[in-house]
Length: 255
Image 1 (cartoon, one colour):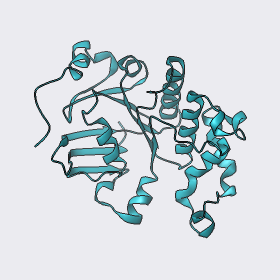
Image 2 (image 1 turned 45 degrees about the vertical axis):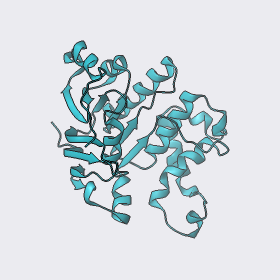
Image 3 (image 1 turned 180 degrees about the vertical axis):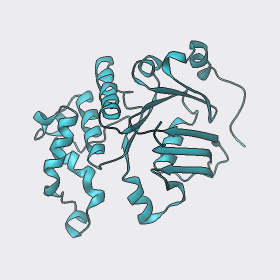
Image 4 (image 1 turned 30 degrees about the vertical axis):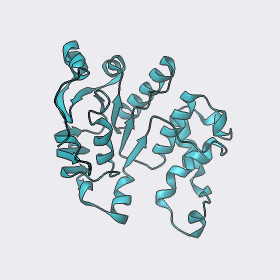
């Protein structure tokens, strides 16, 4: 097995309010692997993704990306390390008035400096690579179309292309199909699996749909009350284990 691309060890997160979102959480993601995290709202899935991405600083444990301890970085070092992790959210967050290709080019800005970039000008030198990213998601024909005219599924695929424009080693997807119809959801999950299996990216994806997890994931992680409950192959996950993730308990995570 390949060395982990992402290694999370003993991760803990306590918010200033006292609420504990994560407790001693560990996981590993290898290149070329699509791992899905299942769990009820509030179980800590999104918090964990944001800690891995460096958007939140955990209160305990560590996150390593390609051997670099991202959880201990700050400032410019953190910004540079985060380029290895492309984020895909529930909503595409495209600039609707801009063209599709311009939205993808915006994913390259972390590699550029200068007054023009600060003032919002996009680096036209990145257009050929942006087109390559659009080709990966099957949308080159829409390059000059305004992003606001796209369907939900198309917009989410553009958000994946924008993440690919960072040249990441891994994609972190937080409920990327939540607002999509079933056909578009399956299409997007198929895309994420191809990016993992064919292009060697590590993909860590939060879902609420066990059936999609079973169909597309290489491994499924179940989360409840801020802890990993199981980590196994889809064919080995029991229905009772999945159902148990969504059963409310009297246990509270608040300190």
